Image 1 (cartoon, rainbow, N blue to C red):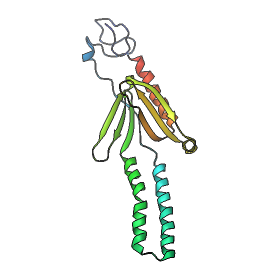
Image 2: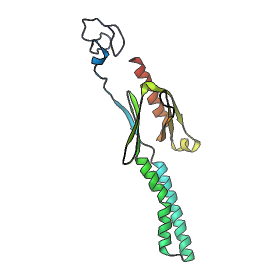
Image 3: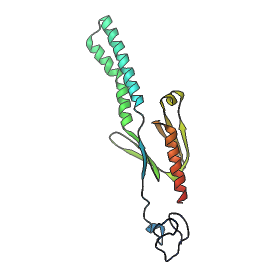
Image 4: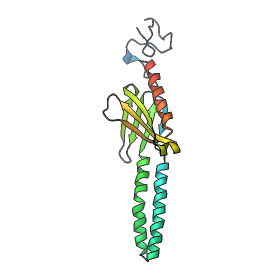
Length: 182
């Protein structure tokens, strides 16, 4: 009989593995579930939303000055300002609806504001993890983490996260830790 956790041979009469201390069982089905531990939970960086609010504010002030200079009605300034702030509000809502979670056994991408969609990828199915950042993103310390999965045709992209290399390394570390138990 072999230990379900470390794979070493254990005596049939033993109640615990002599190497890792896990309780022994006759079948893997009887083996207790390994405790799932949270490694990180992260959302996209809020800086991109702030930039859109700042741009909308500056454009609104410029339009208000132009409308005032040419004697346009005040309701026109309000309408233009409302239009300019649509994009920042939409980006703010999109920011709040996405979160990325890594546990010791899986990666979850949760999205949705009113209805939720959770995409779960077991660590054993991940083939490649890539950290990407453009020059501007590198200057502010953010970027994307791209995860290639063996079971899914599409890539999973963790967009606009702070320090993407740190998160890609954490995913790789958890993948390699899990390989020891297989």
